[in-house]
Image (tube, rainbow, N blue to C red; front, top):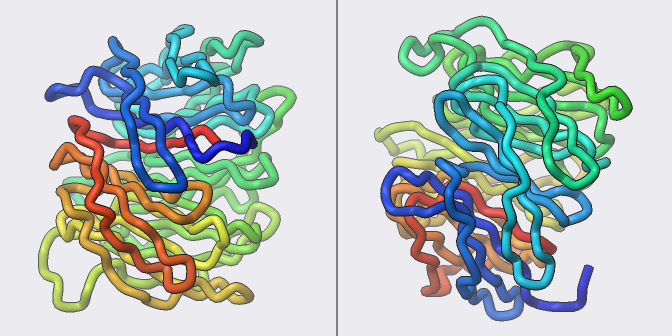
Length: 352
């Protein structure tokens, strides 16, 4: 990593109001300040994005009917994005994308279509047509939200072989195995973990130790912790993300672990908060630390910077990214008074 305190920050958005695309900022990890650089325009709803392991390319979904995945080259000096090409996501409403650790395969999850596709990366970083699309089947207890499959995230384990795909619509975390030579996905063993009916598994993260994993469940506002070994998830704990006296809408979104593995954070839309837990380093158990008001509406996505000193929260419906400082010892957050004004921010990534 270059010895610089400046990182490029990429902000994916919905373009349904005034956003023009993907916004690029410089983020200073010493001061927590962000300064605008450029905007990649002309892409509809570039909501979620992922950066290639060699830091040369960014892949973004176009979240709409007839959804697509776009490939961009990143100028490492200016941060400017150059569109290389776009390919069909193989389903409607793609909402999540991941790049495998070889940089050769891009996986996209289609919320609307209830499917996932894998696309080959060409030598110049552009995308080939999908070589495989897997259609999920089923529904679950919530008639409004779980009437059919809704793939919500694609999560590649540290071994680059186990793939975990939470499906909000079917109340399952589907498991797959990736063959990095052929780019083919096959069913894992076991092929899925079943959530509590009506839970709605959404985003997922693996602990830096590689021993534990956690899923945030949108519809019943919980986080479940797992022992993770050889492709298998063994649930050991489920905790609430909301205070006991809260009676409003349950609408969880994102989940992240601090770089040192000590703390876990989850976002609550409607309650407009991040919930904070400490993580037992040997057992993986979560212990409640507190809630932090996000100073905005609808915290769709958030990010802990690589130094662990800052947390940036993308508040979709108040059109701001709020910057918090993070106490490494307690895990608690403090508003810095700084924010980035962007219309409908959805996803945050840094190039480090």
